[in-house]
Length: 188
Image 1 (cartoon, one colour):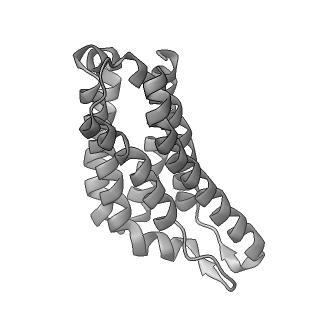
Image 2 (tube, rainbow, N blue to C red):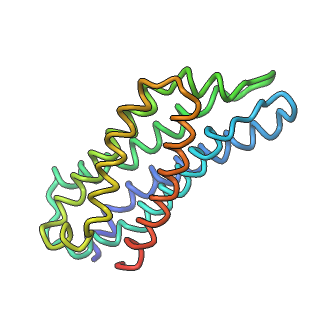
Image 3 (cartoon, rainbow, N blue to C red):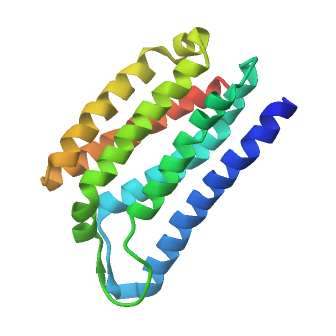
């Protein structure tokens, strides 16, 4: 466990920076007042990022069951927080003064956003595989079904300019994530 505590320190720093980044961007938007044209899909993805960072950070405890963590495995542990940090910066426009349209920003960055979310799904799958067969079985069919849904949804949303498609995927993803993470957190 001491070994995991040492390794998770750097991982935790990245998660902390990501959370701070989202909160700082949200505070900047609030300060803009009427100069910030909010978009509900963007706001839902912001909440998703905060929840994902908190959840993945908490789920670091699952690594305590892994008897040996190699350097390559440790590097793979850095993938998820690193992707979440980049997502936390990409999702928001540059901080500053003046008006900002979050809907226009969202659609301007949707392709790299969803490709990074796709990489997050792949990294989470790799994380599960590296924890061993028993862990993969414990995750159950809901997890694997959700992973398939996220994978396909990210591919579709990276290309789609439809507000309806973006909104439905954001709502369903957030709902599935809440159900899935409550299941995962119950096993820790």
